[in-house]
Image (cartoon, rainbow over all chains, first blue to last red; front, side, top):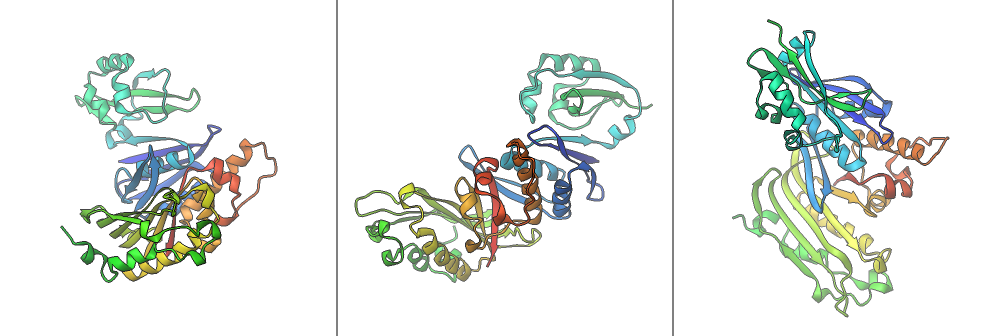
Amino acid sequence: MSRELKVYNEFDELILHAEHNLGDASVRLIDGTREMNRAIKALQGHDFERAAMINGQICVFQAGWDDPDFLDAVAGFWTASFGWRTRIVQKSPKFARAYEDVLISNVVIPNLPDPNPSAAYYAGLGSIREVFSVGKFQLSDLLSNVAYSVNDKFVVTSVIENDQARKPELVVLKIAA
Amino acid sequence: MMRLANFLSPLTEEELRDVYRIDVNRVQERLASLRNDSTVIEFSGVSERTGDGNKLTYSVKLYLESGDPVLDREMERWLSDNKRLLQNPEVRAKVAFRVKFYCRSTFRGAGLATYLIPREEDAFRKWGAREIHVLAMDDGLWVWTRPQFGYTITQGDLQSLKQKHRDWQRARGSTQLVEISRLDEFPRDFFETGVSFLSLFKVI
């Protein structure tokens, strides 16, 4: 399983795109500026812990290097400290296998108010409920925020990004037989 | 519950309290009426087996003879006996964390930090701290990154700070982008408008 982190600056430019592979705990740089590539390389192999003050409370972003939520901790700190927009995409092995198969539904979610909206936000979207019925999966599936298998026939990613339209998409993929 | 004396050993509670006893002859005249007998130091109980090991939080309030506070907010410190080091995150050790230190504007530049900081560090060193961490924010971003305080930043954070500085210059319409190589070279207005927090540390 791997997770990808995309970081955007105030000009909405992609300044970092990195993949954290949880199998061998490696990081692969896909795109980004020189500084951000150096920043993620410097974090490679080390546990992460940074503090920030949010709403008057000290918040600590921490994760071990080989933890699945390592990129979440880094992204959370960068968002709090620098105001950068971040997005994380998780791919399961099933997702990887299904990726080249048939795309059966590709639904744009309108008016996303927050670069990192909560699962509760998605749960409240009527349009998502319609998508659920297409893929025959449960609301709780999406709340898990991972690429998710449904009845061994379909897989739904967490919301992924459409770079051109700058709107996230919910993608449902049919798993190869 | 772990007793305060056991947690602080080999430092004593009296020695820690003494850190905050201000010699008014060594700070500026503006603080001449500071009353040490009005100083309030409050220790929380020692929280055991937190994510950072056993942990003590304490706060300090300083007052003038008039009863006016010297600080905008109480000074807050955390002592953790098994916290991840910033210089080497795979190692856990005793760490002192400076959380808040907000001087009232009237007393900024009156030498209070210059007086207190080395005294605190002596005490933290005696306690056995390997690092001192600072959550730098607001005016503290500029203050704590001054070389005389000796704080630094991780290499990864320095690189991301450089990225932010580059974008900050562009947003202000700069055409000649300045490359910064050291933490203390970033301009003051960048810290005031471009960054919310930094995790600074010092190895002691």
